[in-house]
Length: 221
Ligand code: DX5
Ligand code: ZN
Image (tube, rainbow, N blue to C red):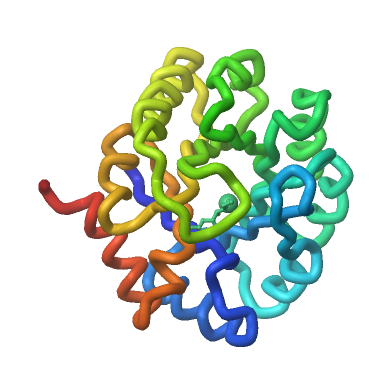
């Protein structure tokens, strides 16, 4: 099983964005995870288009945008034009989910759905063919630095089964509280892409932090 690390820029020092992003990529990180929050779907406000624009000025790395906003469909065209690669939204935040997934793909991005800890997996069951990615939240979204909710591990395993049952090739990403202590269980349950904020940018050596997370999945217990 692959181990793709997607550092969450929410935990980075925005004043040193370029330096920190380059350190993470040099350490082997593959995607750049951008957490867009609107103060309505989640009780916090972050960033959006200007950050994507800033990233695109100095890196070609895939930009993995996670929208925690109501009516995420309003941003599909804009983020596609700015060069975002993955567009993941919460089905809890909108109505016509299948239409939006199709539109994301039509615009050339990978289409993802994110599920809150309390949201049942059945929400993705009818749209597995329209999905490039499923994001299982292992915290309630809104803030970095929270603890991994242990029930997420079983949910990841059930998501893997559901995707296999539908012969769906979607990426299985996990987000929230991923650390040296929690990543291995998520990986063994079947996740292949790991968002980590604090566990990367909260460390003195960013590149080594990325490598350490990867090692937890590759080494024997
Ligand atoms: C939470 C965000 C996460 C967050 C992860 O709402 O979706 O991407 O930044 O941060 P850590 O890794 O610190 O839990
Ligand atoms: Zn996120």
